Length: 143
Ligand SMILES: [Mg+2]
Image (cartoon, rainbow, N blue to C red; front, side):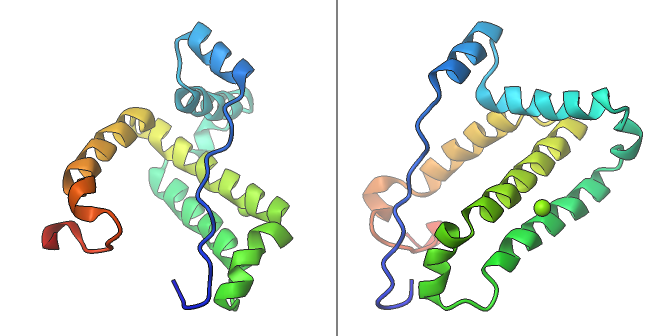
């Protein structure tokens, strides 16, 4: 973080009660629900034929990430902090595109993103125990 630049607070959006209740009723998590919505979107349009190659999905994912990064291109650290406010709709569109393609890639490859996330989170917790890593940015193998 550059000097004089206040870090943005990291916050999670509030959970929508109706969404969580629906997910519970259906027995699906929010992530699994989103993954199914991507599959349903493709199936309804008979687009599976265009989405069989995971390599193309990864290329599209990289392109969408590039579109998100483009919003921050040529900014000072201070301007970058403001970008999400000035271009909120654009940033939201691009992060949604990135998530959509990540979910599609997982669906194409039989990856349960929620399980993968939780498994990786457990590994991350082991690598970076709070007692050793709090307030320091040292890589796990140097702690
Ligand atoms: Mg886009």
